[in-house]
Structure formats: C-alpha cells, structure tokens
Amino acid sequence: MGGIFLSIFGLLVPFWKNGNWNPWFSFLGLALIFVAIVSPSILKYPYKGWMFLGGVLGAINTRILLAVIYFILFTPFGLFRRVFKIDPLSLRLDEKLDTYRKSSNKKDPHHMEKPF
Image (cartoon, rainbow, N blue to C red; front, side, top):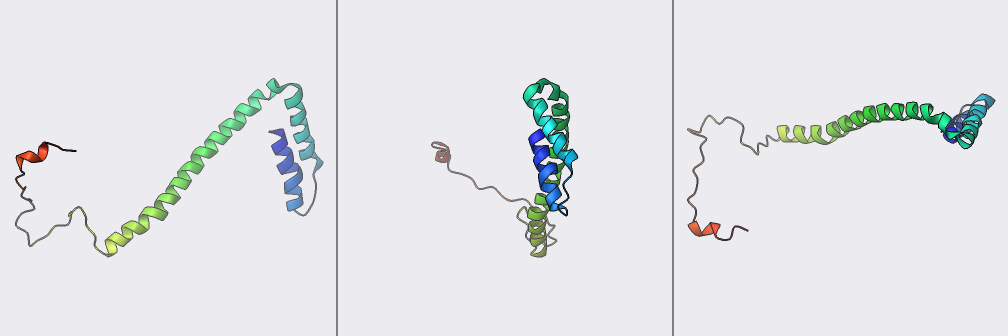
C-alpha cells in the first residue's frame, strides 16, 4: 500500500500536474513502507479499510459495466428485431387464424427404441 501510494501520489501525479512535487505524499508513502517492513501488524486496520473500499468500488463498477454491456449488446438486437418484425415465438395475434393450436404428429412406436 505504501509503495503504491508513493509511486502514484508522490511521483506520477506531480509530474502529470505541472511538475510540482509535494514532499508530503512521498513522506507518507515512505512511512507506510517503513511500517510495513518493521511492524506489519500495525497496518491491519488500514488494510481492512482499503479492502472494504475496494469491495464497494468493485460492486459499483460491476453493476455499471454489466449495465453498459447489456445496453450495448441487447438493445440494438431488440431494436433490430422490432424494426424487421421478427417474432420467433409467434406471440403476435393473427386475426386471420381460427385457432393457435398446432396439431401433433403421431410418431412411430420404434422411435423410442434408441433415443440417443
């Protein structure tokens, strides 16, 4: 955690934003690295908080990504089917038909001898 904090906030962000280096972020990152080396048990609670934050952000990102993927994949497919009036389940009412019943065909009794 300290190394990531040091590399992102101490080195990358300052050079990305006008090149101003803030020593406080580097000091905090180095302090976290030092504590992790000397006494790792102290970082148990920051670790739990960090993992909780990661779990919450992961749950939010998962829902956002699934919603985006759903709308990118299924919305155009559904619109395409509506524009071209594709009805594979025959759910539309047909005024010309007397009944929607489909007669079954009588099968030969031997068709069940070897079903697979």
